[in-house]
Image 1 (cartoon, rainbow, N blue to C red):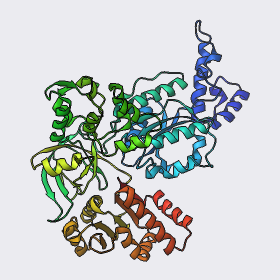
Image 2: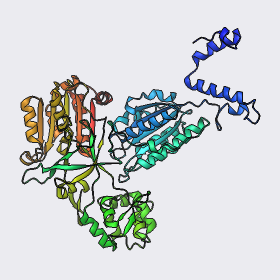
Image 3: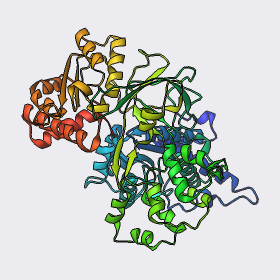
Image 4: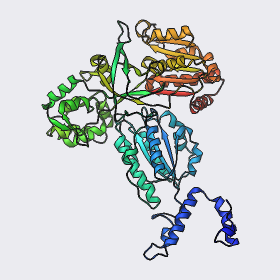
Length: 608
C-alpha cells in the first residue's frame, strides 16, 4: 500500500522515504517500530519513561526481539508432538507467531534464521534420538551446524528414569545449542513418564522468558499443556476411560512356552477414536501378592491413610501401593532420594562416584521389596518412604484392530512376562494382570495414544511391507482389517516370526483368510525353533531380497514393529544389505537410500 501525501501529515520527501522503507520491513520490525513510536509519544507525558529507554527491552543488546517462535519436536510415540502442538496453541493465544514442526520436516539450514526456538524431544532406546529426530540431531551435532549467536532457546526433554541415559537426547540438544552460541530463555526441563506437571511448569517459564524479552509479563499457562486428542473426548491420559473387558484369550497352543493374550475391550460411550498404528495406554495395578510381601517386610499397617500426591489426595496404604505407586522398578533418581532416608552405609557406597557399573547391575531386575530388604532397617515413617515413589506410569500397547471393522472396540496383543532373577520370580505388571487376574466384565483404565509416526499410506494403492515378529504383529492386524474395510488395492507383504509353527502362529486363521481373499498379497514366516538352525524374519527378507528391492523401487512403505534392541536393529541392517546388493550401491549410498525413505515417511518403526 502506497502512502499518499494528500491523505497524510507527511510532506513529499517523508512520504517517499516511508514508501521505500515500509515494504522492506519484516513483521517483527513493524511490531518493534510501533512499540517504539508509542513509547516516543508517551515520553512527552509527565512521569512517563524516557523514550530512549523504551527502544529495546531491558537487558537487550541492541537486537530486535522477534515475536516469531519455532517449536520443533522429535517424538516416537506421540507425546512430544502433543505437547509441542499444545504449546504452540498457548503461545499463539498470547500473540506470538508460532511454527510447529516435526524435526524430520524442518530444513536444518533454516535454523540460522530462527531467533526463538523451543525443542520438545523424547529419548528412545539406550539414549538414542527418536526416528523422526535423527537427521536433525545428526546435523546439529555435526560439523555443518551454523553459529547461532542470535538464537534464544529452551528444551523440554521426555524420558524414563529407569533407563541409564535418561533424557539423553534433550541434554545433547541443550548443550549443543549453547555451544553454537545460543542463549537459554529458560533452563531445560527433564520429564519422567509422569510429565504433565513439569511440562506445564516449563511452558510457564518459557512464556515468562519470551514475554520479558518483549517488555511484558506472562500469566501461567498450566491449563493449556496436555497431550491432545485428535477427536474431542472427555477421556484422555489424565482422565482414562474404564473399558469393559469383552474377551481375554490365550493365542498360544497347548505346549507352548509362551502365553500371548488377545484382549478385546469395549469403548462404547467413551467417544474415543483411533487410527491403525495408534496405541492404547493402560493404567495397571500391582500384584496384590507382591504388595502383601512389602507390607509384611516393612511391618506396615495396610489400612494406614497416606497422602498420594501434591493435591493432598489420600488412600489406605495397601490400595495406594496396588493402584497408585510404581513398586516393580528401581531407578537411580529414586535411590538418590532413598539414601537420604537411610543410615545404611552400603547404600551410600553404592551411590558413590566410581560405582556406576555396580549400581547399574544392582538396578537391573530388582524392585522396591529388594531395596527395603537389602538396605534396612528404615527409621522413617511410612509417609516419608512412599512419598519418594514414582507414580504408576501407563503402559502403551499397539492396537491390534481397526475401528472401522470393530466399532466401539479396541483389541490388544499382550505377551505375558515371567522370569526369575535374584532368587525370586518376577512378573510383568500389566501383562500378568491381564493373564492371571483380568476377567470378562472387569474394567481397565485406558486412553488412546495417537501416533502420527506409524500410519498407513494416505494412498491405499501404495504397496506396504510389514515386519512384525511376536507381539509386533499387533498393529499389522489393525492395518489389514482397515485395508480390507476400505478395499485397498495396493500390494501387501507380511513377514512374521515366532518360535513354533504349531503353537505360536498368532492370528493364523486371520492371515490365511486374508491371503486366500487377496487382501494380503504375500506372507513369509520364520519359526526359529522348528529347524536345527534358527531362522528369523531378516533371513526371510534376504531370501527374497530381489523381490523386496523391487517393491521398494515401486514406492513400497516399510513398517517394523517389535523388539528394538535385537530384532529392529537386525532388520534395519538387513534392509541396508538388500539395498546395497540389489541396487548395486555403496554402503553409504544404501544408508542414504533408507534415510531418504524415512524422510518420505516410507520407513516407519514402532519399536520398544
